[in-house]
Length: 477
Image (cartoon, rainbow, N blue to C red):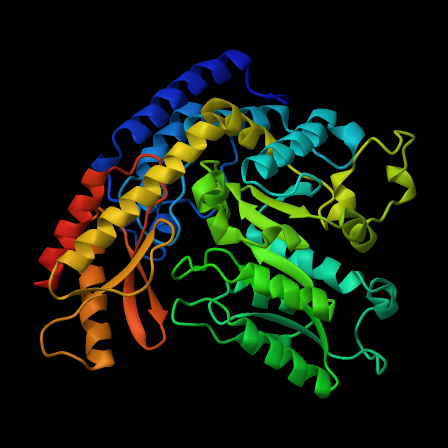
């Protein structure tokens, strides 16, 4: 029985075969249904209940990519993927991921992966500068915006040493007031999950009303903060959103930042999707005031063409993050010096993947101008779709289109009841998605059930959107 790895000539042979398979998958995406047709349990039923006792050939394993894996894949890399926030595993990103797996860096400390640590610093700085963020911000990479937001709120809680939460915790303390976190009613659910994980509790996530463009209303925020203080609560942080999940609306960051400064609150900006718009100098006015934030998150794996997962978190308070998370047992002590940055001191993870490599590959391969051109084209395509909606009777544009997401619905003549309209548009969505050519999603804006087209894949062209619009027309009857 072999006790070592497979021979490297097998790696080379199968890697070449896989490269051809990946090329075919990317080159001819329309051959497959964008939305998997599998039902719950279908894929598991194709697999044996127990692992093989003897090793199988790589030929047999790779054959199961088409037999087992592909039937259960929803193709996020498909040009017809127009649901949620579309993303792209670009060619340079895929190549970077391959190298990351081969090098298998475990970034516990600087010395366990010097290149991983220092390329992460550089890639975060490059992206920060490309987006027009302040030069002094410290950046780090996490897996998702959910974790980035949780880290930011943990740091917000630690900024006041008098709370003594790192050492004493929160349970059973009569001296600790209830801490409050504020966001808009359209903020992402990751704010709620962060507060659950941090022990703040859902009751202390206060969702503030929005205006007609689905942006947080600063005057309402000021009122709820004042009301909370009068009841003995302790306002802690505000999460503003730059590109809400439903409509890509941008909260008035400058006004919120002024309020946070006056109230001594941490301001975290969730720009997980929308932050990519910072690549466009003509769009940066959308984010006026963002330089006053205490922390900002942008997901490179959403609209910056980097494969999952790669969420970039910046802060102007790295010392607070370090005070929140740093813990060095004796077996991790080194003499590397202060210049050796250990990212494990700034978050929960000890071992970290070399995520920065794929972002570094993408930024070098496309360049800042190339990335901006691709984002700008997606914004243009969204305006094209919005134009089709407004120009076609019985279709209604339901929200502004500041980025690359279009919210709309069909309005049959004489139908005004919201429950009927919801059922009608839900049926349209079901029919369109059943085609396998495109995949759309929906959201709720108040009482209105609306459809969404989200453009963000490098391979999506106007012809794919025209086909989606044709399918919508056919489904609407």
